[in-house]
Image 1 (cartoon, rainbow, N blue to C red):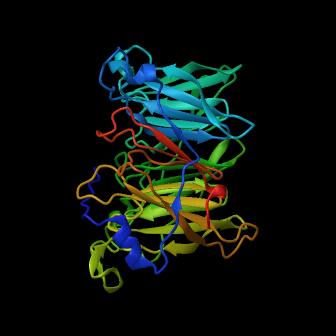
Image 2: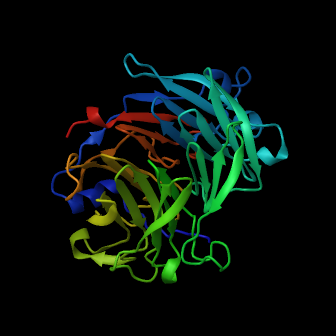
Amino acid sequence: MARVLFLLAFTFSSALALAQSTPLPILSPIQRLTPTNAEIYPTPDSPPSELGFGYTLALDERTAMVSLSNADHTNGRVAVFERGYRGGIWQRSGSIEAPNTPAAAGFSQALAIDGDYALISASHTNYLYHRHHGQWTQADELDGIVAFDAVGQAIEAPYVFIEGQVFKIDAHNKLRPTQLLVGDEPTGPVNEDGFGQVVSVSEGTVAISAPVNNVSRGAVFIYELRGNHWIKTQKLAPSDLAIGDEFGVTMALSGDILAVGATGKDYNFVDANCNNAPTSGVVYIFTRIHGVWKEQQQIKNPCIYGFATWLSASRDHVAIAYPTYYLSAQWSDMIVYERNSRHHRAGVTFTPIGNLGRDNPNYGSIPALFGPTLFVGDGSDPTYPPGDVDVYDLQMQPH
């Protein structure tokens, strides 16, 4: 399923001013991560290398992985960072080099990490890595098994999800197929309804989107781990969806919070409150209450065209990124929302606390969010060829 966004030039500052009377504060990074000088300048007096640093990101507890998709003109590499216990500073602890085989082309186009396991995707292969005594080594590979989209795979050890396929890491750190998850089209063509375009897993629950389901209204399917099997427990499809809304084209699951984007909702809606400019996109917030996922909030469009193009969530925060340039392939602005009620199971809502600001106008990667830590990278911006990654601590931001 191909997805093309036709985006109007609509700057963040003007859009936000239309949507609210008090401008949001600019969130400030606490640290900027960069490649090493040897990676940027492989030979003396050479121009900066186009490394693609930060094109893809993965974050878990005190470990982060950052892509260098064009490193040394090879298949690429992954930079590994660890967060120190004193001062919370992230430092480069090592690298994972791409295998020197044709199958590894595009190494690091998708990253996922959970504890001591990481899934690193190439164009035609998924690689499983295991950390032992601080060293990451390749444990297994799935040749020819890749997701349609960079967010179509996820890991929660010992389980690995690639679209609807479930693999389990055995005692020898090998991936064994265990189950095939299906949505509404179990006998139809693969991905007929976009099933598996986005996969997100958290605490024994996996959400799989099907944004083309029901004439592109979209749907999200919920599965829970019962014993050794994943059981379908719910299908989410809000009653207000219309043809072309593509509910589930973006999605993020964390604990008892599920954020789902419908980028086509209210497509080209001309809003009088937005200076009669066209808008599109809504984010739905669901909460699990007594074992059932229920819609809690629709984060309305703040006068943006292409709102909810990228999503990231982590319990108490949701980051919503969107492009502001016509036919842009990158996102360039982001609003961060914070959960209002953290200790109640009902009535959960999110309100905006700030937007990102930096000297580089374009970002390139899907943001990574874990707890209050937010990583954003610009590895696909051609004007900054090496790339860099900004680190935000959302608990330290002004409210």
